[in-house]
Image 1 (cartoon, rainbow, N blue to C red):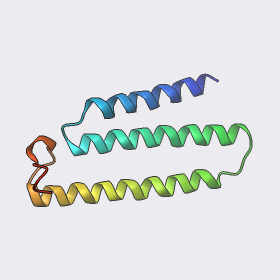
Image 2: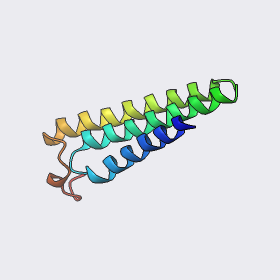
Image 3: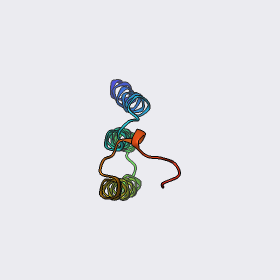
Length: 95
């Protein structure tokens, strides 16, 4: 039961980091990955405690890796086109 509280604390720390750091795309992506990692650990702990199959956990891990690679490719394309990942330097009309 104590592990659920720790995982909930990890999740809310990730959400707080996501909402407070919105100036750089890299810090936003890292906080999103932190949230996904907390959810992954919670699902793993939940399924192991009830002796379920871990196929859903593997699917979740595959989709989270695909999401992170998509975010990284967007980061690389923004840095190549604009020179940095700072959100305040972009105009809405340019993109």
